[in-house]
Image 1 (cartoon, rainbow, N blue to C red):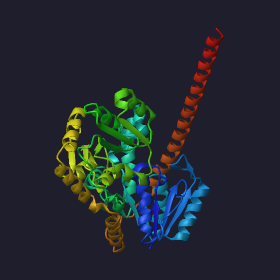
Image 2 (tube, one colour):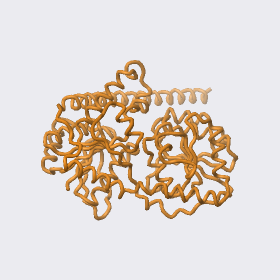
Image 3 (cartoon, rainbow, N blue to C red):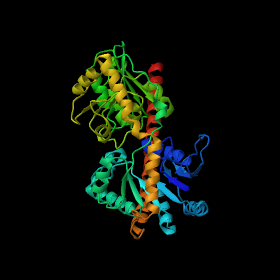
Image 4 (spheres, rainbow, N blue to C red):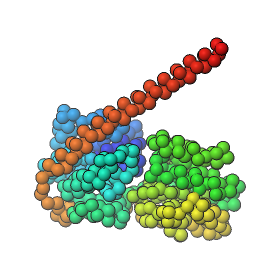
Length: 438
């Protein structure tokens, strides 16, 4: 079978969606001929034995495809020559909609995996800095209208868990909807020996790009209520500089010495961090299905988190702990101590239960469920109604135009900030020279 996998992100960007789409394509290529279509650069190396090809598209920044009419015609010519039997998109936006239009015209089954909750897509990211009309209910309604229209033109839609299932239904989509979880290569996280709960230092770890949704500021605040032997390791890229400055502002010298910022780490290095982690901590306000939590559990690391979609799905007292969303940093710290200062037998039991909890999320299971969904559609199960592609194409084109304008504005803002910094540096240099001459 020939499968086309579509993503709006290069494999090393876009958080979970970028990694998942790439890994999904790799896993599928072990069974079928796969082309992975995305904006960005092709991966440097591929696993042996895979039938994987990358179709890369010129991109603006690392996520926005710079599609001209000429490039769109080239994509359609490629699709005509590749003749995919199935198309599986991990993005509902411009590239996904353009390929969906081709699939509808050619009668090719088209599936979509939703990596975000439709009702909350505008609650985070750059949109939070906007005001007035752009953050009004009108924008939410337009987004929901587009997503529902996009989904109605899919052969099937994939929700990652029951929370995503309810949310997708909640925005008005009534078509075929399957629950298929993210997959992980669980073997990468085998072999960890439970750590000593009586060690002189105890390490708490969290991974996620720095932004308010990940709520790292809460974890840093929580550390104040723990004894000095506790250390916090924060893995992630500084994508929101304002938020990172907020975190820095609440740390004194003593607290700063207990927090390690690793920056972005390649996911192949995460197992080494987990090997020295006593407890995985998460204060994220929303996580549809966090890869980081799944990997922590797979390694046999207990998890403690504030209630969100992933924590509610995967974490309970058997593998760590779950607190209410409005729990205070002090309450969180008390729960950390309860888990990390227990007896050795209880801690080992938590580690073993955590490892077992992750077993259903192996890529092999995800692939079996995905292929079963494809087979059902080939038998006519869940076929979609015939409908015009005007709405999704219109909205996708508008989204592409708005994204290009927003990107240009951001570039100008960045340039202005740099010029302002240069001007300040020159003023400071002039003042220093004047003082020296005086």
